[in-house]
Image (cartoon, rainbow over all chains, first blue to last red):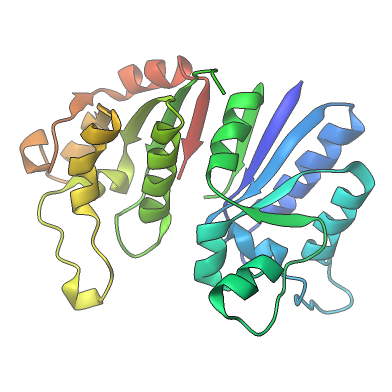
Length: 130
Length: 121
């Protein structure tokens, strides 16, 4: 089956990103297709490579990046939500005159149309959040 | 992209205090721009989003009551409100800023069941 995943909460404060990660990993392990993982609201904070959790804790951001590398998972961060919260790639930095970037590997910034497309293309869309 | 799906946006949170309601409304407008069959459901504190007379100056947050009035221009006309949530907060359809269809939880559940995509915020 073809799934799309939506993550609406940031890392560590809320379990949504953890649950979404485990669910996505399980889907791929079972041979399902994951069309896209879309990060919205504070969920965009899952995409900052500057995250530095204590060594004995899970690294939620790196974990997503690694999953994307191993499976060509399409991980999209909403541009409007990202701009509000300071998640920046090179294009956004240039456009908005910012002096650095922080988007983690495996993520890309794009529009909300990508969320609607994820809903249209997938057999099931699963939302993780409050 | 010619596929048209039934999208329902479920709003359960108060309009201010968190950003969920505002950012959800942005998704609805994009879905409408993609010519999808959109509806919105309001329950729990989400019914406060539709309450007439938002005044946000004091909290220095942009108000978005007017956006609900503009939904019609985007062909988003199916607004469903949970009767129990309204009653629990002492509200009726008269208190709301746009025309809505008030229904029971069971009816709302049935409608949800008919959707292709349910996005809850």
